[in-house]
Image (cartoon, rainbow, N blue to C red):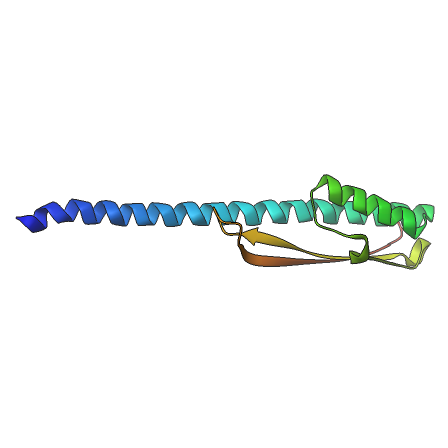
Length: 126
């Protein structure tokens, strides 16, 4: 008889554990997707800036300022030292390296560090 009373309790505990696990994975997935989407926006912007700067022969200082401004708009942790600009005009190459933390839900502990590396070269318009 006592075992009959424990069955519903065990089922509720199991359901609670599964729900908690699902919520944690959902939050982690959401953070990962958000970080990846933001990086894609930066990547598209880098391509645009490099093509524009290469065509108009803009100085490296201006290109760096444009990239830093966009990074700030996207709330990306990019510092000036993480942007390398080589060449100018048709030989323009831009390299951006940075990392983002994926935090454990509910705690401010880093669960995973995602490293992003971008290398964008100027290519002549077609």
